[in-house]
Image (tube, rainbow, N blue to C red):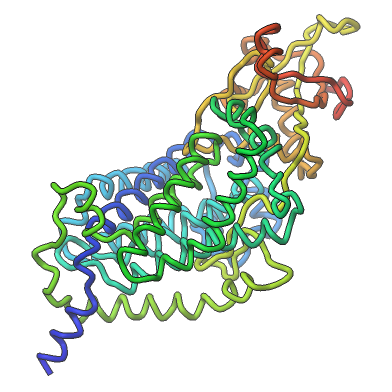
Length: 484
Protein backbone atom coordinates (compact mmCIF):
# COMPACT_ATOMS: atom_id res chain seq x y z
CA UNK A 1 0.00 0.00 0.00
CA UNK A 2 2.86 2.37 0.83
CA UNK A 3 4.40 1.66 -2.56
CA UNK A 4 1.12 2.50 -4.33
CA UNK A 5 0.73 5.68 -2.31
CA UNK A 6 4.30 6.70 -3.10
CA UNK A 7 3.81 6.00 -6.82
CA UNK A 8 0.58 7.95 -6.94
CA UNK A 9 2.07 10.89 -5.06
CA UNK A 10 5.04 10.97 -7.45
CA UNK A 11 2.76 10.86 -10.51
CA UNK A 12 0.51 13.49 -8.99
CA UNK A 13 3.31 16.05 -8.77
CA UNK A 14 4.79 17.78 -11.84
CA UNK A 15 8.23 18.76 -10.60
CA UNK A 16 9.23 19.96 -14.05
CA UNK A 17 6.70 22.83 -13.85
CA UNK A 18 8.18 24.74 -10.91
CA UNK A 19 8.89 27.85 -13.00
CA UNK A 20 5.31 27.70 -14.27
CA UNK A 21 3.99 27.57 -10.71
CA UNK A 22 6.06 30.56 -9.63
CA UNK A 23 4.86 32.57 -12.62
CA UNK A 24 1.23 31.55 -12.09
CA UNK A 25 1.09 32.21 -8.37
CA UNK A 26 3.08 35.43 -8.31
CA UNK A 27 1.66 36.76 -11.58
CA UNK A 28 -1.98 36.18 -10.64
CA UNK A 29 -1.31 37.67 -7.19
CA UNK A 30 0.24 40.76 -8.81
CA UNK A 31 -2.92 41.28 -10.87
CA UNK A 32 -4.94 41.01 -7.66
CA UNK A 33 -2.82 43.81 -6.19
CA UNK A 34 -3.71 46.00 -9.17
CA UNK A 35 -7.40 45.01 -9.00
CA UNK A 36 -7.75 45.79 -5.30
CA UNK A 37 -5.86 49.08 -5.55
CA UNK A 38 -7.91 50.23 -8.54
CA UNK A 39 -11.08 49.31 -6.66
CA UNK A 40 -9.88 51.23 -3.62
CA UNK A 41 -9.32 54.31 -5.79
CA UNK A 42 -12.50 54.17 -7.90
CA UNK A 43 -15.23 52.12 -6.19
CA UNK A 44 -16.44 54.72 -3.62
CA UNK A 45 -17.00 57.37 -6.30
CA UNK A 46 -18.59 54.93 -8.74
CA UNK A 47 -20.54 52.59 -6.48
CA UNK A 48 -20.10 53.72 -2.90
CA UNK A 49 -22.64 55.17 -0.49
CA UNK A 50 -22.74 58.40 -2.51
CA UNK A 51 -21.57 57.00 -5.84
CA UNK A 52 -23.10 57.02 -9.30
CA UNK A 53 -24.76 53.63 -8.73
CA UNK A 54 -24.79 53.28 -4.92
CA UNK A 55 -24.45 49.71 -3.70
CA UNK A 56 -26.79 50.26 -0.70
CA UNK A 57 -29.58 51.24 -3.09
CA UNK A 58 -28.75 48.28 -5.33
CA UNK A 59 -28.94 45.88 -2.39
CA UNK A 60 -32.16 47.44 -1.09
CA UNK A 61 -33.78 46.71 -4.47
CA UNK A 62 -32.85 43.04 -4.25
CA UNK A 63 -29.62 43.20 -6.21
CA UNK A 64 -27.08 40.45 -5.54
CA UNK A 65 -29.81 38.26 -4.01
CA UNK A 66 -28.39 34.79 -3.59
CA UNK A 67 -24.95 35.90 -4.77
CA UNK A 68 -21.77 34.99 -2.84
CA UNK A 69 -20.77 38.43 -1.55
CA UNK A 70 -19.77 39.71 1.86
CA UNK A 71 -21.77 42.87 1.16
CA UNK A 72 -25.13 41.17 0.70
CA UNK A 73 -26.35 41.98 4.21
CA UNK A 74 -24.45 45.22 4.71
CA UNK A 75 -22.32 47.66 2.74
CA UNK A 76 -20.30 50.67 3.81
CA UNK A 77 -17.44 52.51 2.16
CA UNK A 78 -15.31 51.78 5.22
CA UNK A 79 -15.93 48.06 4.84
CA UNK A 80 -15.14 48.24 1.13
CA UNK A 81 -11.84 49.97 1.83
CA UNK A 82 -10.97 47.37 4.48
CA UNK A 83 -11.65 44.56 2.00
CA UNK A 84 -9.39 46.24 -0.58
CA UNK A 85 -6.55 46.83 1.87
CA UNK A 86 -6.65 43.25 3.19
CA UNK A 87 -6.80 41.90 -0.36
CA UNK A 88 -3.89 44.03 -1.56
CA UNK A 89 -1.72 43.08 1.44
CA UNK A 90 -2.39 39.34 1.09
CA UNK A 91 -1.79 39.52 -2.67
CA UNK A 92 1.48 41.42 -2.15
CA UNK A 93 2.63 38.71 0.29
CA UNK A 94 1.96 36.09 -2.39
CA UNK A 95 3.91 38.12 -4.95
CA UNK A 96 6.82 38.10 -2.50
CA UNK A 97 6.40 34.34 -2.12
CA UNK A 98 5.92 34.37 1.66
CA UNK A 99 2.91 32.00 2.01
CA UNK A 100 4.59 29.66 -0.46
CA UNK A 101 7.37 29.05 2.11
CA UNK A 102 4.90 27.27 4.39
CA UNK A 103 2.81 24.12 4.04
CA UNK A 104 0.64 23.59 0.91
CA UNK A 105 -2.54 24.76 2.65
CA UNK A 106 -1.11 28.24 3.39
CA UNK A 107 -1.08 29.62 -0.20
CA UNK A 108 -4.36 27.75 -0.70
CA UNK A 109 -6.00 29.76 2.08
CA UNK A 110 -4.40 33.01 0.88
CA UNK A 111 -5.63 32.65 -2.70
CA UNK A 112 -9.10 31.51 -1.65
CA UNK A 113 -9.31 34.61 0.53
CA UNK A 114 -8.44 36.79 -2.49
CA UNK A 115 -11.06 34.97 -4.54
CA UNK A 116 -13.77 35.47 -1.90
CA UNK A 117 -12.93 39.15 -1.35
CA UNK A 118 -12.80 40.05 -5.03
CA UNK A 119 -15.85 37.96 -5.90
CA UNK A 120 -17.72 39.93 -3.21
CA UNK A 121 -16.80 43.17 -4.97
CA UNK A 122 -17.68 41.92 -8.45
CA UNK A 123 -21.12 40.69 -7.39
CA UNK A 124 -22.17 44.21 -6.30
CA UNK A 125 -20.16 46.06 -8.96
CA UNK A 126 -23.06 46.19 -11.44
CA UNK A 127 -22.19 47.60 -14.87
CA UNK A 128 -18.82 48.94 -13.69
CA UNK A 129 -17.67 45.37 -13.00
CA UNK A 130 -19.39 43.69 -15.93
CA UNK A 131 -16.18 42.94 -17.84
CA UNK A 132 -14.91 39.52 -18.82
CA UNK A 133 -11.56 39.96 -17.10
CA UNK A 134 -13.31 40.25 -13.72
CA UNK A 135 -14.55 36.66 -14.08
CA UNK A 136 -11.17 35.65 -15.45
CA UNK A 137 -9.35 36.97 -12.38
CA UNK A 138 -11.79 35.20 -10.06
CA UNK A 139 -11.35 31.89 -11.86
CA UNK A 140 -7.58 32.24 -12.08
CA UNK A 141 -7.31 33.02 -8.37
CA UNK A 142 -9.34 29.94 -7.49
CA UNK A 143 -7.27 27.66 -9.74
CA UNK A 144 -3.78 28.72 -8.67
CA UNK A 145 -4.83 28.29 -5.04
CA UNK A 146 -4.38 24.55 -5.58
CA UNK A 147 -0.80 24.74 -6.89
CA UNK A 148 0.48 24.28 -3.35
CA UNK A 149 3.61 25.62 -1.69
CA UNK A 150 7.32 25.08 -2.28
CA UNK A 151 7.17 21.96 -0.11
CA UNK A 152 5.41 19.91 -2.79
CA UNK A 153 5.65 19.63 -6.55
CA UNK A 154 2.98 21.46 -8.57
CA UNK A 155 -0.04 19.14 -9.09
CA UNK A 156 -0.22 18.09 -12.73
CA UNK A 157 -4.03 18.17 -12.64
CA UNK A 158 -4.04 21.86 -11.73
CA UNK A 159 -1.49 22.59 -14.45
CA UNK A 160 -3.88 20.95 -16.94
CA UNK A 161 -6.83 22.95 -15.59
CA UNK A 162 -4.87 26.18 -16.15
CA UNK A 163 -4.29 25.12 -19.76
CA UNK A 164 -8.02 24.41 -20.09
CA UNK A 165 -8.65 27.98 -18.93
CA UNK A 166 -6.25 29.37 -21.55
CA UNK A 167 -7.91 27.15 -24.16
CA UNK A 168 -11.34 28.62 -23.36
CA UNK A 169 -9.89 32.12 -23.41
CA UNK A 170 -8.22 31.81 -26.79
CA UNK A 171 -10.46 29.36 -28.65
CA UNK A 172 -13.60 31.08 -27.33
CA UNK A 173 -12.33 34.44 -28.57
CA UNK A 174 -11.44 32.94 -31.94
CA UNK A 175 -14.83 31.29 -32.42
CA UNK A 176 -16.80 34.39 -31.41
CA UNK A 177 -14.86 36.37 -34.01
CA UNK A 178 -15.52 33.89 -36.79
CA UNK A 179 -19.21 33.72 -35.93
CA UNK A 180 -19.75 37.36 -35.15
CA UNK A 181 -18.32 39.65 -37.83
CA UNK A 182 -17.61 39.23 -41.52
CA UNK A 183 -14.56 41.52 -41.19
CA UNK A 184 -12.77 38.79 -39.21
CA UNK A 185 -13.53 36.27 -41.96
CA UNK A 186 -12.42 38.50 -44.85
CA UNK A 187 -9.31 39.62 -42.90
CA UNK A 188 -10.23 43.33 -42.79
CA UNK A 189 -11.05 43.67 -39.07
CA UNK A 190 -7.78 45.39 -38.21
CA UNK A 191 -8.35 48.05 -40.84
CA UNK A 192 -10.48 49.56 -38.05
CA UNK A 193 -9.77 47.93 -34.68
CA UNK A 194 -6.62 49.81 -33.65
CA UNK A 195 -8.49 53.09 -34.19
CA UNK A 196 -11.87 52.14 -32.72
CA UNK A 197 -10.82 49.97 -29.76
CA UNK A 198 -12.16 51.14 -26.37
CA UNK A 199 -8.99 52.78 -25.12
CA UNK A 200 -6.06 53.30 -27.51
CA UNK A 201 -2.52 53.63 -26.18
CA UNK A 202 0.53 55.57 -27.47
CA UNK A 203 1.28 52.97 -30.17
CA UNK A 204 -2.27 52.41 -31.41
CA UNK A 205 -2.05 55.11 -34.08
CA UNK A 206 1.22 53.70 -35.45
CA UNK A 207 -0.37 50.24 -35.61
CA UNK A 208 -3.44 51.70 -37.37
CA UNK A 209 -1.28 53.38 -40.02
CA UNK A 210 0.49 50.14 -40.98
CA UNK A 211 -0.20 48.94 -44.55
CA UNK A 212 -3.43 47.02 -45.05
CA UNK A 213 -1.45 43.98 -46.13
CA UNK A 214 0.10 43.92 -42.65
CA UNK A 215 -3.35 44.21 -41.07
CA UNK A 216 -4.54 41.19 -43.07
CA UNK A 217 -1.52 39.23 -41.86
CA UNK A 218 -2.34 40.32 -38.29
CA UNK A 219 -5.85 38.90 -38.59
CA UNK A 220 -4.61 35.68 -40.17
CA UNK A 221 -2.04 35.28 -37.40
CA UNK A 222 -4.76 35.93 -34.83
CA UNK A 223 -6.88 33.13 -36.29
CA UNK A 224 -3.98 30.68 -36.13
CA UNK A 225 -3.14 31.72 -32.54
CA UNK A 226 -6.74 31.42 -31.34
CA UNK A 227 -8.21 28.58 -33.41
CA UNK A 228 -5.27 26.19 -33.90
CA UNK A 229 -2.61 26.83 -31.28
CA UNK A 230 -4.88 26.31 -28.20
CA UNK A 231 -5.21 22.60 -29.04
CA UNK A 232 -1.42 22.27 -28.93
CA UNK A 233 -1.34 23.40 -25.30
CA UNK A 234 -2.24 19.81 -24.42
CA UNK A 235 0.41 18.25 -26.67
CA UNK A 236 3.59 16.64 -25.28
CA UNK A 237 6.60 18.84 -24.61
CA UNK A 238 8.21 20.78 -26.19
CA UNK A 239 5.16 21.37 -28.43
CA UNK A 240 3.07 22.66 -25.52
CA UNK A 241 5.78 25.16 -24.57
CA UNK A 242 5.99 26.38 -28.17
CA UNK A 243 2.20 26.81 -28.27
CA UNK A 244 2.37 28.80 -25.04
CA UNK A 245 5.10 30.99 -26.57
CA UNK A 246 2.80 31.79 -29.51
CA UNK A 247 0.02 32.79 -27.12
CA UNK A 248 2.43 34.95 -25.11
CA UNK A 249 3.81 36.71 -28.20
CA UNK A 250 0.37 37.49 -29.63
CA UNK A 251 -0.79 38.81 -26.27
CA UNK A 252 2.33 40.99 -26.01
CA UNK A 253 1.36 42.59 -29.33
CA UNK A 254 -2.03 43.43 -27.85
CA UNK A 255 -0.32 44.90 -24.77
CA UNK A 256 1.83 47.08 -27.03
CA UNK A 257 -1.08 48.39 -29.09
CA UNK A 258 -3.98 48.78 -26.65
CA UNK A 259 -5.28 49.23 -23.10
CA UNK A 260 -7.33 46.17 -22.17
CA UNK A 261 -6.96 46.37 -18.39
CA UNK A 262 -5.32 43.16 -17.15
CA UNK A 263 -6.84 40.84 -19.77
CA UNK A 264 -3.71 40.42 -21.88
CA UNK A 265 -1.22 40.43 -19.00
CA UNK A 266 -3.22 37.80 -17.12
CA UNK A 267 -3.49 35.67 -20.28
CA UNK A 268 0.30 35.83 -20.61
CA UNK A 269 0.72 34.74 -17.00
CA UNK A 270 -1.71 31.84 -17.43
CA UNK A 271 -0.01 30.70 -20.65
CA UNK A 272 3.08 29.84 -18.59
CA UNK A 273 1.07 26.89 -17.29
CA UNK A 274 2.15 25.08 -20.47
CA UNK A 275 5.84 26.04 -20.26
CA UNK A 276 8.09 23.36 -18.80
CA UNK A 277 11.26 23.94 -16.78
CA UNK A 278 13.23 22.28 -19.60
CA UNK A 279 11.99 24.93 -22.04
CA UNK A 280 13.00 27.71 -19.66
CA UNK A 281 16.37 26.06 -19.10
CA UNK A 282 16.94 25.92 -22.86
CA UNK A 283 16.39 29.67 -23.05
CA UNK A 284 18.01 30.62 -19.74
CA UNK A 285 20.65 27.97 -18.88
CA UNK A 286 21.01 29.42 -15.36
CA UNK A 287 17.47 28.24 -14.57
CA UNK A 288 17.40 24.62 -13.34
CA UNK A 289 15.62 22.07 -15.54
CA UNK A 290 14.52 19.93 -12.59
CA UNK A 291 13.81 20.42 -8.90
CA UNK A 292 15.03 18.46 -5.89
CA UNK A 293 11.56 17.34 -4.86
CA UNK A 294 10.39 16.23 -8.32
CA UNK A 295 10.01 12.62 -7.18
CA UNK A 296 8.81 13.24 -3.60
CA UNK A 297 5.21 12.10 -3.03
CA UNK A 298 2.69 14.72 -1.94
CA UNK A 299 0.84 14.24 1.38
CA UNK A 300 -2.30 12.18 0.91
CA UNK A 301 -4.46 14.92 2.46
CA UNK A 302 -3.15 17.42 -0.10
CA UNK A 303 -3.79 14.96 -2.94
CA UNK A 304 -7.39 14.55 -1.75
CA UNK A 305 -7.96 18.32 -1.67
CA UNK A 306 -6.65 18.74 -5.22
CA UNK A 307 -8.68 15.79 -6.51
CA UNK A 308 -11.89 17.23 -5.05
CA UNK A 309 -11.18 20.65 -6.61
CA UNK A 310 -10.36 19.00 -9.96
CA UNK A 311 -13.58 17.00 -9.93
CA UNK A 312 -15.54 20.19 -9.21
CA UNK A 313 -13.91 22.01 -12.13
CA UNK A 314 -14.52 19.07 -14.48
CA UNK A 315 -18.21 18.97 -13.57
CA UNK A 316 -18.53 22.73 -14.07
CA UNK A 317 -16.77 22.49 -17.46
CA UNK A 318 -19.67 20.96 -19.36
CA UNK A 319 -21.73 24.16 -19.98
CA UNK A 320 -18.74 26.24 -21.23
CA UNK A 321 -17.53 23.32 -23.37
CA UNK A 322 -20.94 23.05 -24.99
CA UNK A 323 -21.01 26.83 -25.42
CA UNK A 324 -17.74 26.81 -27.40
CA UNK A 325 -19.37 24.80 -30.18
CA UNK A 326 -22.83 26.36 -30.01
CA UNK A 327 -24.17 28.46 -32.86
CA UNK A 328 -25.45 30.85 -30.20
CA UNK A 329 -22.13 31.09 -28.43
CA UNK A 330 -22.16 33.34 -25.37
CA UNK A 331 -19.27 35.73 -24.78
CA UNK A 332 -17.98 36.51 -21.27
CA UNK A 333 -20.69 34.51 -19.54
CA UNK A 334 -20.70 32.73 -16.20
CA UNK A 335 -22.73 29.55 -15.70
CA UNK A 336 -22.64 29.57 -11.90
CA UNK A 337 -22.72 32.05 -9.03
CA UNK A 338 -19.06 31.58 -8.17
CA UNK A 339 -17.55 32.75 -11.50
CA UNK A 340 -15.77 29.44 -12.08
CA UNK A 341 -15.19 27.81 -15.49
CA UNK A 342 -16.63 30.70 -17.47
CA UNK A 343 -17.06 31.40 -21.18
CA UNK A 344 -14.77 34.09 -22.58
CA UNK A 345 -14.35 36.05 -25.78
CA UNK A 346 -13.83 39.55 -27.08
CA UNK A 347 -14.69 41.68 -30.11
CA UNK A 348 -17.17 39.39 -31.77
CA UNK A 349 -17.92 42.46 -33.85
CA UNK A 350 -15.59 45.30 -34.78
CA UNK A 351 -16.69 48.92 -34.72
CA UNK A 352 -15.68 50.67 -37.93
CA UNK A 353 -16.15 54.24 -36.73
CA UNK A 354 -15.17 55.83 -33.45
CA UNK A 355 -17.68 58.03 -31.65
CA UNK A 356 -16.83 59.88 -28.47
CA UNK A 357 -19.08 61.63 -25.95
CA UNK A 358 -17.52 64.92 -24.84
CA UNK A 359 -18.89 66.53 -21.67
CA UNK A 360 -18.69 70.31 -21.48
CA UNK A 361 -19.58 72.81 -18.79
CA UNK A 362 -20.07 76.57 -18.66
CA UNK A 363 -20.02 79.16 -15.88
CA UNK A 364 -21.83 81.74 -18.03
CA UNK A 365 -25.37 82.61 -16.99
CA UNK A 366 -26.45 82.34 -20.62
CA UNK A 367 -23.81 80.48 -22.67
CA UNK A 368 -24.52 81.63 -26.22
CA UNK A 369 -21.01 81.33 -27.69
CA UNK A 370 -18.86 78.24 -28.20
CA UNK A 371 -16.16 80.00 -26.19
CA UNK A 372 -18.42 79.84 -23.15
CA UNK A 373 -18.07 76.05 -22.99
CA UNK A 374 -15.10 74.11 -21.62
CA UNK A 375 -14.52 70.36 -21.89
CA UNK A 376 -13.87 67.88 -19.08
CA UNK A 377 -10.96 65.57 -19.88
CA UNK A 378 -10.92 61.90 -18.97
CA UNK A 379 -7.74 60.03 -18.07
CA UNK A 380 -7.86 57.38 -20.75
CA UNK A 381 -10.53 58.00 -23.34
CA UNK A 382 -9.83 60.40 -26.24
CA UNK A 383 -10.85 64.03 -25.78
CA UNK A 384 -8.31 66.74 -26.57
CA UNK A 385 -7.32 66.08 -30.19
CA UNK A 386 -3.70 67.03 -29.49
CA UNK A 387 -3.22 64.67 -26.56
CA UNK A 388 -1.46 61.36 -27.19
CA UNK A 389 -3.31 58.47 -25.52
CA UNK A 390 -1.65 57.14 -22.39
CA UNK A 391 -0.69 53.65 -21.28
CA UNK A 392 -2.83 52.55 -18.33
CA UNK A 393 -3.20 48.77 -18.59
CA UNK A 394 -3.13 46.64 -16.53
CA UNK A 395 -4.85 49.33 -14.45
CA UNK A 396 -8.55 49.51 -15.27
CA UNK A 397 -10.20 52.92 -15.83
CA UNK A 398 -13.80 51.81 -15.42
CA UNK A 399 -15.55 55.12 -16.08
CA UNK A 400 -13.57 55.68 -19.28
CA UNK A 401 -14.54 52.24 -20.56
CA UNK A 402 -18.23 52.86 -19.94
CA UNK A 403 -17.97 56.16 -21.80
CA UNK A 404 -16.86 54.14 -24.85
CA UNK A 405 -19.91 51.88 -24.57
CA UNK A 406 -22.13 54.95 -24.10
CA UNK A 407 -20.84 56.42 -27.37
CA UNK A 408 -21.79 53.16 -29.11
CA UNK A 409 -25.39 53.71 -28.05
CA UNK A 410 -25.59 51.42 -25.01
CA UNK A 411 -28.05 52.54 -22.31
CA UNK A 412 -26.41 54.29 -19.37
CA UNK A 413 -28.61 52.60 -16.72
CA UNK A 414 -28.66 55.88 -14.83
CA UNK A 415 -24.94 56.21 -14.22
CA UNK A 416 -24.38 58.87 -16.91
CA UNK A 417 -27.18 61.10 -15.67
CA UNK A 418 -25.77 60.69 -12.19
CA UNK A 419 -22.32 61.64 -13.51
CA UNK A 420 -23.65 64.88 -15.01
CA UNK A 421 -25.36 65.67 -11.73
CA UNK A 422 -22.12 65.11 -9.81
CA UNK A 423 -20.25 67.42 -12.19
CA UNK A 424 -22.87 70.15 -11.73
CA UNK A 425 -22.17 70.17 -8.00
CA UNK A 426 -18.42 69.69 -8.48
CA UNK A 427 -18.36 66.48 -6.43
CA UNK A 428 -14.73 66.00 -5.40
CA UNK A 429 -14.73 62.20 -5.47
CA UNK A 430 -16.12 62.21 -9.01
CA UNK A 431 -13.71 64.89 -10.22
CA UNK A 432 -10.79 62.76 -9.01
CA UNK A 433 -11.80 60.16 -11.60
CA UNK A 434 -11.11 62.70 -14.36
CA UNK A 435 -7.86 63.97 -15.80
CA UNK A 436 -8.86 67.64 -15.96
CA UNK A 437 -11.59 69.77 -14.39
CA UNK A 438 -11.78 73.02 -16.40
CA UNK A 439 -13.33 74.86 -13.43
CA UNK A 440 -10.75 73.95 -10.76
CA UNK A 441 -13.25 72.50 -8.32
CA UNK A 442 -15.94 75.14 -8.80
CA UNK A 443 -19.41 74.00 -9.94
CA UNK A 444 -20.44 75.00 -13.48
CA UNK A 445 -23.75 76.69 -14.16
CA UNK A 446 -24.57 74.58 -17.21
CA UNK A 447 -23.52 71.21 -18.57
CA UNK A 448 -24.00 69.42 -21.89
CA UNK A 449 -22.77 66.36 -23.79
CA UNK A 450 -21.95 66.29 -27.48
CA UNK A 451 -21.01 63.40 -29.76
CA UNK A 452 -18.02 63.55 -32.12
CA UNK A 453 -16.69 61.24 -34.79
CA UNK A 454 -12.97 60.69 -34.13
CA UNK A 455 -10.29 59.21 -36.36
CA UNK A 456 -6.52 59.06 -36.16
CA UNK A 457 -4.73 61.86 -38.01
CA UNK A 458 -2.84 60.71 -41.08
CA UNK A 459 0.89 61.36 -41.22
CA UNK A 460 0.38 64.49 -43.32
CA UNK A 461 -2.43 65.77 -41.07
CA UNK A 462 -0.23 65.21 -38.06
CA UNK A 463 2.55 67.29 -39.62
CA UNK A 464 0.19 70.10 -40.64
CA UNK A 465 -1.96 70.38 -37.51
CA UNK A 466 0.05 68.80 -34.72
CA UNK A 467 -3.08 66.81 -33.82
CA UNK A 468 -3.22 63.14 -32.88
CA UNK A 469 -6.93 62.94 -33.69
CA UNK A 470 -9.22 64.52 -36.27
CA UNK A 471 -12.85 64.96 -35.27
CA UNK A 472 -16.19 66.35 -36.37
CA UNK A 473 -19.36 66.89 -34.37
CA UNK A 474 -22.23 64.56 -35.19
CA UNK A 475 -24.90 65.48 -32.70
CA UNK A 476 -25.94 66.32 -29.18
CA UNK A 477 -26.48 63.64 -26.54
CA UNK A 478 -27.58 65.93 -23.70
CA UNK A 479 -28.83 69.46 -24.30
CA UNK A 480 -27.53 72.27 -22.06
CA UNK A 481 -28.86 71.55 -18.57
CA UNK A 482 -28.58 73.09 -15.12
CA UNK A 483 -29.59 72.28 -11.59
CA UNK A 484 -33.16 73.12 -10.73
